[in-house]
Length: 147
Figure 1 (cartoon, rainbow, N blue to C red):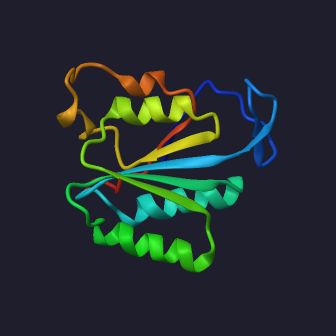
Figure 2 (tube, rainbow, N blue to C red):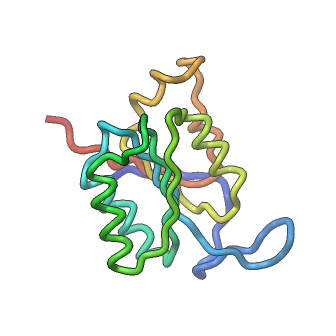
C-alpha cells in the first residue's frame, strides 16, 4: 500500500471541523473501484483504514449495467453483516478528475483509496494531465504486487 501526502489538515479525533460552518463532520474514506480491477487487497486496505480512522466508507464503483462486480457485492454484504457504515454509488463512467472533484468538494473525505494510478487515463480526455496532483487529501494505492 502506498500513500501520497495531501494538503488538507486533519484533526486527531474521529471527526473534522467544517471550515465553512465550524460544525463537526464525520470522517470518510473514499474507495473508488473499477469493474475488472477489484482485488481483495484493495477492499481490505479500505476497510482497515476505516477501522483505524474510525471513519465511514464511501464507495464509488465504475461498472456498466446494474450489477455490481461480484467481489464488491460480497464486500458490501460483509460490511452490512459487521455493521460498518458505508454508502455506495455505481457509475458507468468514473474518471480520475471525477474522483478528485468528489473528494475535494466533500470535506468529510479524509483519504482516497484506489487500486492503481495506472489505467484510469483510458477514459480521460487529456491523458497527459495529472488530476491526482490536485487531490486535497492523501491518496492510497493498493495495487496487487506485480508478478
